[in-house]
Length: 305
Image (cartoon, rainbow, N blue to C red):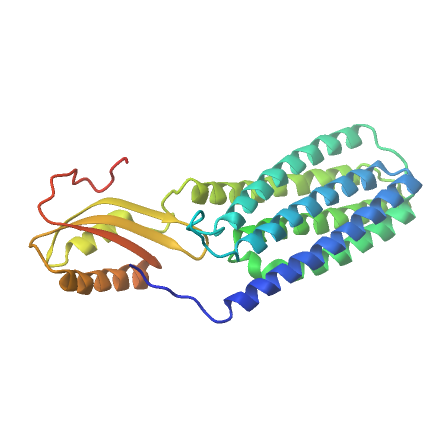
C-alpha cells in the first residue's frame, strides 16, 4: 500500500523529452556526416576523430531515446515494474561510453600534441561553427530535463562535451590559421576530456547505486526507524529495505512488530500515518509494510535476505 503522486502533465512531458531527443539525434547525424566529408577533404585527423566522437554520441542518444520510449510502457504479468529502470540503465551505458570516449580523446590529444599536422583551417573553422550551433541547440533542448533525469543528463553531457569540443576546434582552427599554433587543439581536447571523465564518473556512480538497489544518499534509515518506532502501538521495526526504482519512485519495505493483535482496520490507520510521515519528510512514495504480532524472527533493522 502506498501513495500515488502522478500528474496529468507527465505523459505530455515525456512526449516532449522524446521529441527533443529525436531532434538532437538528427542534428548529430548532420554534424557527423559534415565532419566526415570535411575531414576527408581537408585532411584533418582532428575532424575525423571528432566525427567518430559525434557518431558515438548519435548511438548514445539513440540508446536514450529507446529507453525513454520503453519507460512509458505499462507493467505486465511478466514485467511487474514495466520498463521503469530503462532510463537508469541507459544512463549507466552512456556514462560508461562517455568515460571511454574521454580516454580515447586523451590518447589522441597526446599523439596530436607530439606530432602536430598542418591542415586546411578554413574548413575546420566553418565545420566547428556548425558543430557549436547544432550541439548548442541540442543542449538547450535537453538542459531542463537533465536536472531531474539521469538518462537525459547522460545525453545532455554527451552533447555539452560535443559543443565544448567544437569550441576547442574553432579556437584551434583560428590559432592555426593566424598564428600557426597547431598544438593548441591538443591541449584544449585534453582539458575537455578530463572534464568529461569527471562528469561521467559522477553519473556512472549515481546510476550504479540505483541499479544495485543502494539506499539513496539522502535517506537516513536509522532516523526513519526511530520515528516509526515512536508510534504508540509499534513494538519494533525491522527487516528494512529502502531503494530507488527510478528517479520518480523511492520504495520502503519493512516488517513491523505490533504490541497487540490489532485488526486490519486499525493497521490501515497506522499504515496511513507511516505513509504520510515518510512521504512528507523523505519523499518515499511507495510503502510496503508486513505487520507481525509475536512472530519469532530476526529483529535486526537490516537483514540479509
